Length: 253
Length: 253
Image (cartoon, rainbow over all chains, first blue to last red; front, side):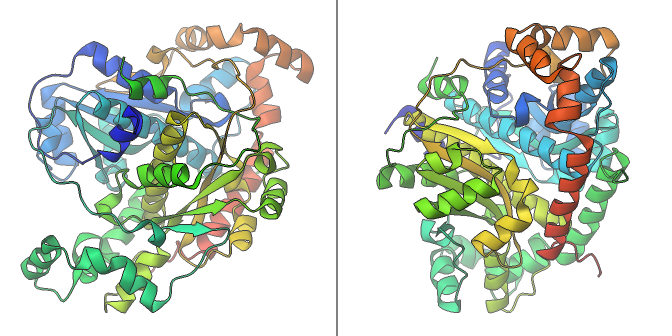
C-alpha cells in the first residue's frame, strides 16, 4: 500500500487540538496542494480565508455553535465559492460575465470542496488533524458578515486544522456494497437496508446514544435530534436566502 | 516532501486514455479511500455508480456532450447525493425523515464531492489518470433517467478513470495570493486583478485561444464561448428543476 493510500485510509476526524501553531511553510504546502485540485475550466472560482487570530477564532467558535475545537485549534480554513474575482476580471476586460445564477454557484461550490478535501489530505499527510464544520452552511448569513464577503462569494465549508490532542478510534462506515452501484442504480429492498445498517446499529456507541437520547433506535436520533426536519427547513431558508443575496439567483435573460 | 503531497501536487487532468481495464482490487481500494472521507454526521448520504459496460459508456459519452474520453476510458464513476437509502432506513425504523429540502441536498452534495476527490487522489497514487466532467450538472435530468435514480438521489459529478495515454504539461494556477485571504476577505482592486491574472494572460496557450476564437482576450472567451450566460441560465433551470423533481425542495412545515 502506498503512502497516499495509507494517508487516505487513516483519516479520523479530530475534535481535540493542541494549541501549537502550524508552521507557515506547512500551511503554504497545504494550500498549494489544495489549489492543484481539478477546477472547472481552470477558472478557480473559490477563495480560502485563513483565520489564526485568537479573538477572531473565539468569535468564529460562537458562530459555529460553540464547538470548542474552533477556538482551540490554531487555524481555521473557510472555503468559499467565489465568482467575485472572476467577474471583476471579466468586467476589466470588457467581457460581460453571466455568472449570477444557480449553476455558477454550484460550479464554484464544487471547486471549493475539491480544494478543501485536497487541503485536508495534505494536512493529514503532515500529521495534522482536521474536522469539517457543517455549521458553515447553517450560518452562511452570519459568516458573510463576519468575513465581509462581497456579492458573488458564498461560504461553503470550514476546516479546523491543528495538531491532534486525542487519538480516537476510526469510526464505522457502511459496507461498500451499500453505497456502490454497478451500471445502474439498484434501489434498496427492506432486507438490503437491514443488512447495510446492521453493523452500525449493533455498535456499543449506538446503544449508548439510544439510552442517552431515550429513543427507540439510531435512525430516530438522526431524524428527531441531530438533523431534524425543523432545523433543516430553517437552515435551508438561511442558505437559499444567502445564495440569493449574494447574487446567484438572477435567472432572467 | 512526502508521497501524499507529491501525489497531490502532481495532479494533471488526463483527457486521453488507454483502453486497459482497471484491476478490480485497485478499483476497490480507490472506492474504499473515497468512503473514508469526512461525511456529515457519518450519514454517508451519497452513492457511487460504476460504469464499465462498453455500450453504456458510449451512451454516457453522448450524454456528456460527446467527449471522446468518456467512451475511451474503462471506468466512469458518477457520484450522487443520496438521501434515498437514509430515508428508507429511517422509515423502516419508525423515524420520519426530514431530508426533502435544499439544505439536505447540499449536505449530501458535499459528502459526494469529498468522496470523489479522495477517490481521485487514490487513483492518481496508483498511476491512473482522472478527469472531472462538469457536464454532470448540465445533464442531470438525463442522467437521472439513464441511471434510474429514485427520489432523493441527484447526480453531482462524474470522474473518468483510466491509464493515461498522454503526458500533458501541468496547467497554470493563479498565484496563491490571488485566492487566499487572511482573517477577512480583502476585495480586489483593479491593479490586484491585473497582477493576479497577468501570468495566465501571457501564456502562449492564451494567445492561441484568442486567435482561434477571434476575440479580444481570454476573459471574453470564458464569458462568451466557454461558459456563456445563455448556457448558464439554461443549465441552472435544468439542475434546479431536477433538484425539485428529486424531492429536495419541499419547504413546507
